[in-house]
Length: 369
Image (cartoon, rainbow, N blue to C red; front, side, top):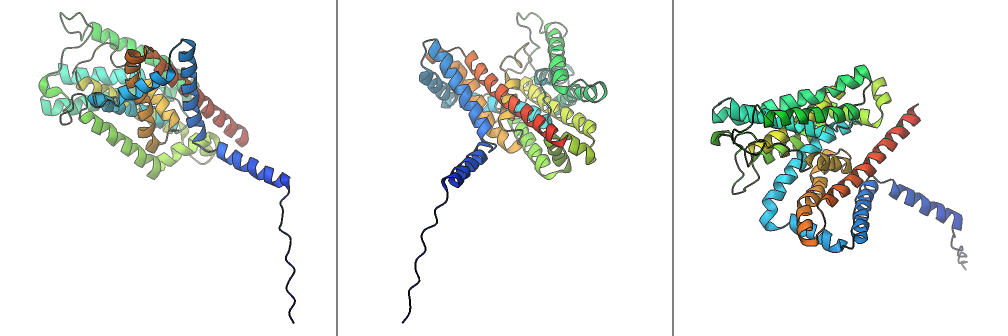
């Protein structure tokens, strides 16, 4: 005769341990890298909705107008070209951002690239086969040299890169504005602009598109190179190490000053490339203020911050700010909401994400002290 074993009572975990498990899971979820960027976008949209409601406007109608305006098939060519410019400026901000530096001088670097391209392609009388490549190379070199000035200012004189780029950029914009208004101005024109480029000194178009040119392919190639360097090359590892912990990277033998020089030069070169592509594309001339007024620099900075500087995410985050920028005009026409509201939304995203970056850096410095 066998005796059946007595079943044990089910184990009941104390209520306190369940609460601790839930809190731990919630803490892990809140520390996920996606939470803060998504939260920043939601906060920006909510602030925009509150502003519109306080003005007696319908936020749902306005946001719907933004989407339909940006994704309208008739304007998709223009939207794609703007996406390319914002991606390029996002790369200009993301390369220094990988090592924890902010490049706020995108406007100055972009206009220097634009005026260099206008001079080489329009003033030197080069044959067409040389004009466009040399204009692009010249723009990249001039803008990169200008952007690299911030690195020695930081390492030798202690001027933060965020400050020096912010102060040098208006100087470059003012110099280029003077050049476009006087020495390089089109004679007899009431608009401050350079003469139209010769037909053989223009960036070739992409198929039947009116706005998109082969410059878009160049920008995509730059993003691919940035991704490869960031993920596969030693310099990409050094950038990320300095960005995670500058003191640890210095102890590990990374020459931070030289790395900052290269990062600033490369980022500024990307901005110069964008300026050259805009000038070599329709309407094939440099118009005073035309490069800075659309706000490509700050849209690119916001896209880079939203992506956390990660090259693979830049094309995705740039879509959001492209929709905001292109759809802003449709929002103004359809819902009577000023397009400047899209600038406000971008500003909120930049402030939230910049604060997150600064707080993370200070936590890292305190933990390594």
